[in-house]
Image 1 (cartoon, rainbow, N blue to C red):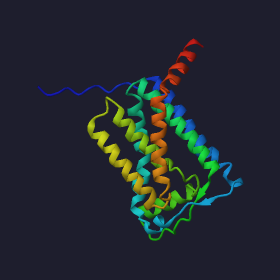
Image 2 (image 1 turned 180 degrees about the vertical axis):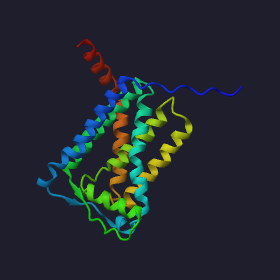
Image 3 (image 1 turned 30 degrees about the horizontal axis):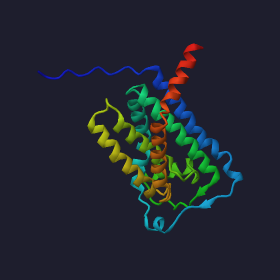
Image 4 (image 1 turned 120 degrees about the horizontal axis):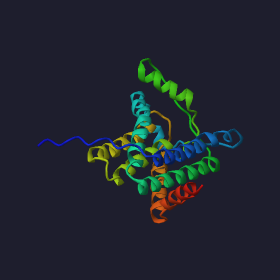
Length: 222
């Protein structure tokens, strides 16, 4: 007999609450620190490896596709259940807090090349450059968030294997894209990966999902 298609799970309120905390932490880490960067000295983070990496305009497609990848992955991971959602959410907030601290303690910048030529990809990259100044480099939040999506997908029970594999591959592609479109320096990539894994391990060992449970219990009493 053919398998019946499973009905989609309805997103629970805790998914949106957890996602809201994660989004707020990301906004503070990225945009909040940018308000202070003009008053801080910047350090050029480019090195010999960066000089060997060419600008490849078509990679901006991967860079921009990461945004819908984050949204789909976050909703899928968080809806897997409260234990995983609260643990990943706590690790994510911690990662954003630590990243924001690094942005302020060690502000980085880089010189970006001129985008030549015409076409869709060239237009997209010019738009990216116009909207996103070369600051808040290390660790790369693009890499960090994509790593959270890949690691969260691997830990989720209800996410199919094909999406787990896709998440890993796409995370690697994002790591390449931030370098080929000259949005980050080489050191930003391993820094993003290490920051993500560090905070996930802290959340696992410290059982930080208890923070979400405690907050939920507090608001229920209220």
